[in-house]
Length: 81
Image 1 (cartoon, helix red, strand yellow):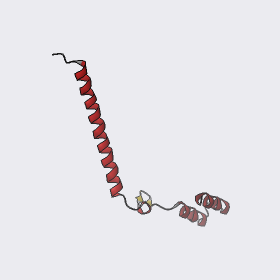
Image 2 (spheres, helix red, strand yellow):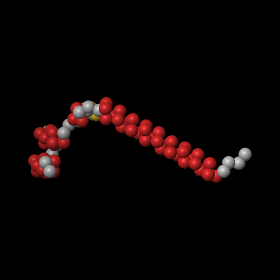
Image 3 (cartoon, rainbow, N blue to C red):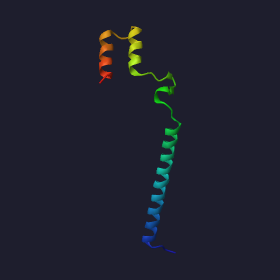
Image 4 (cartoon, one colour):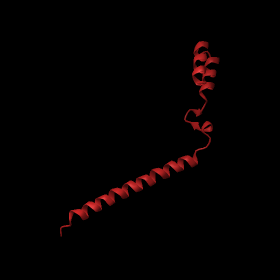
């Protein structure tokens, strides 16, 4: 039995709309779960340890002698903008 083109086309559009709808639902659920499970951004752990503010990293590197004073001043000025 041959179906009319209008019936086939409407069925395709419903399948596309349903796929898009469920895709949006899944992405929204993943996003919301991520937002709800995440705590304070500064307290999050990385693979290499706790996150450190950039200025603290620059201070630590300056204290260790890894960077010169003028580079530390430049970094500090850039971060204070």
